[in-house]
Amino acid sequence: MSQQIITPELCDWITEQSRAGHPSEAILGAMVGSGWDATVAREALARMLGGAPAAVVPVPPTSSASNGYTPGLPEPDLVGRPSEIDAGDRKVKIALSLREPRVVVFQGLMSDAECDGIIEAATKRLARSETVATSAEGSEVNAARTSDGMFFERCESELIRRVEARIAALLRWPLDHGEGLQVLRYRPGAEYQPHYDYFDPNHAATASILKRGGQRVGTLVMYLNHVEAGGATIFPDIGLDVMPVKGNAVFFSYDRPHPSTQTLHGGAPVIAGEKWIATKWLRQGVFN
Ligand SMILES: O=C(O)CCC(=O)C(=O)O
Ligand SMILES: [Fe+2]
Image (cartoon, rainbow, N blue to C red; front, side, top):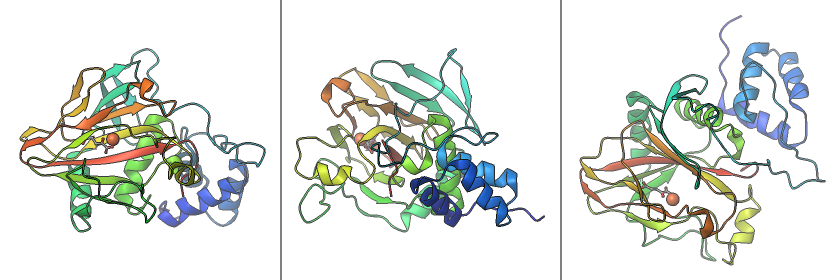
C-alpha cells in the first residue's frame, strides 16, 4: 500500500468523531474500514487525542453528564528529572524545570528549518496584532502589546500539524484542546507588558469566550529566531527571565484563573533586531 498521510481533513474528522462521543476504538475501526492503514490510523488518533502512538488512548469524557473538560493540566513527563523527553518525532531537551509556578524551558523543541518555515508562512499574513476579543464588537488592538501577529488554523499545513502533534506529545495534552498557533513579530522597542494568559473571570466577555473550549490552562511560547538584544520572556512575580533562543520554548501552566498562580509574564522590549515567537495556548476542553 502506498504511504498514507495524516491530512488536516483527517485531523478535523477525528476531532468531530471524538466530540460526538465515539470512543477511539470505534473511530479506529471506522478508519480501518474505510481503507486507512491501521498503523497510520493509530498514530493519527494518538496525535489528535493525546498519548503514545503505539496505543489507542481513551477519549476525554464528552457526554452531557460532564462538562467535557479534560481533568488535570498539560504537563511534560518529568518524573525522574530526565534531561530529554521523546516527543514522538523529536527528542526535546529540558533546560529548566520549576514546580511552583510550573515553568519548564525546553531546548531544541523545533529545528532551525521549522522555525524558518513558520516565520515564512506567517510573514505573508501579518497584520497589527490583536488580542482575543475583549470588546463587544470583537477583537481590539491592545496597546500593551506593540507587536504584529497572526493566527494559523490548527493543522493548517504539514509543518504546523507536525509541530502541534509534537507539542501534544510533549505536554501530554490533546491536540484539539489547543488554540491555533499565534505568531508575533516584535521590532526594536516593541514589548508585551506583563499580563496573565487566562481569561479574567470578572470580565464581561469571559463567559462567552469560555463556551469555546473553557479556560486556558497552559501556555507554550516558542522562539523562532535569534534576537540580537532584549526580548526575554519575563516572570516578574518570581524574578525569572527566559532568553529567546531560536528553537527553544518556555511552558507554564495555571490551574485557576487567579494571580496566585504567579504566572504574570510579559515580553521585555526588544533592543536590537527582531523577535519572532509562536504561542500555543492550551484549553480545558476541545477548542473549535
Ligand atoms: O513575547 C513573549 O516572550 C511573551 C508572549 C506572551 O506572553 C504571549 O504570547 O502570551
Ligand atoms: Fe502571554
